[in-house]
Length: 294
Image: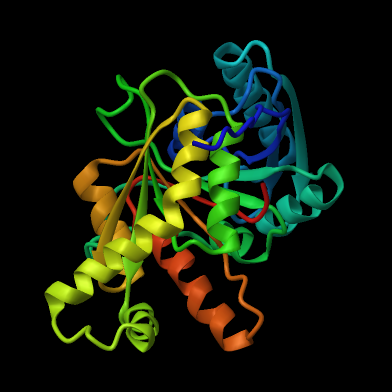
């Protein structure tokens, strides 16, 4: 078995914080994100006259309260609170350019809308699609945090999927943390396999080859996670990744889903691959982290 020496590294995180219930829940969710003891955190509160907070004084009070809560939870972190005025997503993205975070964190509610869907607000949507670093859409799930985290990874063996595994392996996780790699074989994947295996003629054979395909792609990543002290496994599903990832997260009661961004060279492929990340971030009831770099 290969031995992987992956050590935790200092991380910088930028937290968009407006004092809402979702924002406070996002701070609680950080307990289960695996960030190391020497994390450098910048908490940014943006005032805009049409939404809370509306004034600079209100923003300052909210930012300081958020910093106090974060300092109480993570006494070893280096934490700074700042304020800005303007459009929250634009100010957060602008500050990210100068701060250079590894991850931007924004909170979203985890409850369903009247139509039965989870959603991502304008601020989160803009940051998710435009940020140059990883983005964590944080949602706190009720009744799950008495245990160690359960992390679901959308895994397809690509360079982006390997970066997700590297990112997880570099963090610091509590004992008994579980990572499940979920490989979803859709029609295009099965079609590619079928080019080399013409005997694929029924669902049973398709499933067999999909499992072999996934286990082969995931072998090195599973070893890396195990070497980092994280319990890991591989699951295979046939279908559409947008739906299968969300369903598996619900059935497995995952605390967070890690997915990759659009990274294909062709613009149309970028749209399709990116749409999976957007769909998962928008519809999953747990936290979702889109990993752009390790």
